[in-house]
Length: 150
Image (cartoon, rainbow, N blue to C red; front, side, top):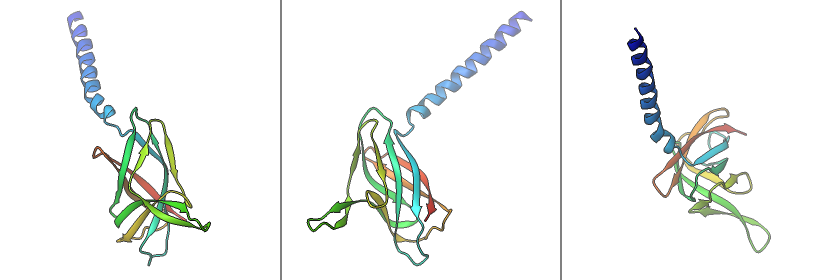
């Protein structure tokens, strides 16, 4: 009876150790970038474009370079920033890359950096979630659901 007790205790520990070993690669492969406060601007149903906003934080130990954006609801998606002109006005300009240093956060907000979604093949309605992915240099994709709101 005592031998059975020790065997069961050993078996339980072995299974727990095995499960922990399986979980380690999953934990190690978690994206270093977290996305919070993600939303897409609700637009009229005839619109061909909309914008998306969020805050991204690099939780990793190395800089991460975001090189693009993708979503199934648009024919094209780009990072943009509003830049001042000499005459005091501001113009929207495409950002080809964005580098986030370790522990750095950047906020994409109305009037500043934002994502532009062009050639919408589906115009999301208020309350609907849209999946948008940030693409990084090392072929990493960080996907997040963005809620549609006004």
